[in-house]
Length: 360
Image 1 (cartoon, rainbow, N blue to C red):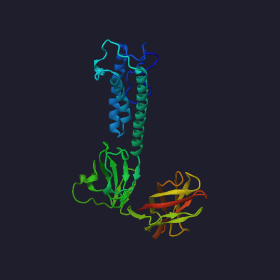
Image 2: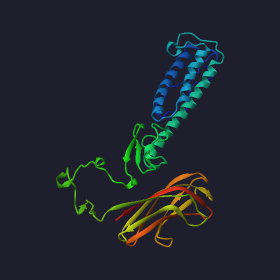
Image 3: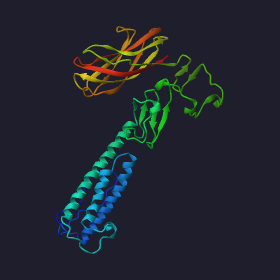
Image 4: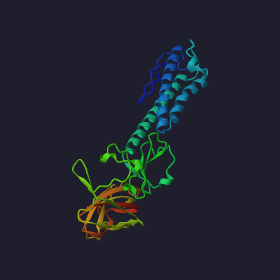
């Protein structure tokens, strides 16, 4: 072909077709027998690539339509020019076909389109694979309840996706990406109880108890620590009751985000895990917001965490974690407050919730 290579450009993630340049001297309006031989070899290699990419696209729920259409356009153009419908299996026929006006220039452009669409598809598949990998290592707090789980398969909820529902259930998408699997079922949220069906006992002393109740005043562990009747966990939960906007450079309480707790002694530990949904409305974009947990009032024991917002006026959800200890024995109120880290910033919270875990 006169100075018009049909070689595609772009890299493959899993399969490289044989695509040698076609530079047979001749008229750009004709296809010689050697042109046909090279064309068939290149088209066969591209079909093998197409099979591989179509399989990957289906697995990762990615559209391969643009690439498939680009490959099909080669055959469409040849048949429209005058080639037999079964050219891909009957050629070479030992003859020169044509004249077909600009056929070699047309084919060169079509191969370039294939290369572009193949590279785009490969990049999309790779990005989806990376997103799935990232999604499988962290939980996502979602707005829907357990009973309203989204239909699968879905590119929004790929294989391995963890979701903590609005009614505190934890589910995960199975490896095939086709069904939700229960990870934790508990009305009390993330720190609920385990049912017997969720525990596989490999070794248990005391003659491997199979019936009845396991009772002991102390459970000893290999590292020297012990679990006694005093080592218990209680969960307290609260949710935001109305939106709140903090004034510049000030501390403001989050309506409804408080729990009443009881401490047995100063060694009790209170772990607070929560999330907020809101946005930064003014100040420096991607700035920080201090989250405070005060005990009893603004002058009591306090601790704080920091969460970061993105662009201004973009609603986002953020997790925060706080820990309190040293409370005196008795009943206390733990209240969540917020304060902008920068005096020019303002933030608005529209929805938030906390779980306070007491370990004593």
